[in-house]
Length: 205
Image (cartoon, rainbow, N blue to C red):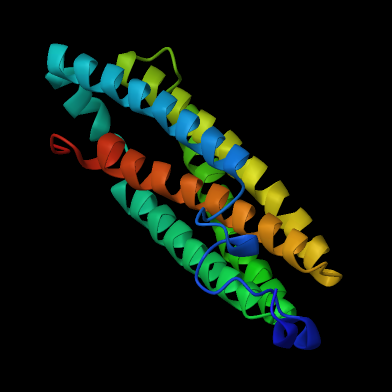
């Protein structure tokens, strides 16, 4: 860390990760993210195989979903993810108050995803649609349910991040912030794939 950074209380990380690392977050967190995305890639492959085997069932079932809700959730997560990016940038510049504000905003906006997803689930169950309806909805509830679990964990991570940013401890706090951001981006990315796969792929009519 440079003397200037020590005087100003700013982590000397430039455009790399905490402590000058080339990684954008903790290596353990990055390994978990890669492994988790690999698992989802297998899920997506199974879904694609099922769709090829029975395209009419998948097409008719997909028409029962509301792509407007899926799009709204996509935009919510993208905006929330952008705010987390800005939070990391602020943290790297030593602007901890700005970083904390942006994480709070990301959490508030991101919470809209939960409200829409709960509404969508309630609407489906109210219409008699369950994971047992057919293969498409088995995958739909399984994939979105696992993703929602990841989202809920991400919310918890952001809450802890907000707490840590109240009394930042230099590089340790920056490392946490970067790792939290990487995890939240994984949640974003998985949904960006799930949205077209479940709501759009193959048409809705």
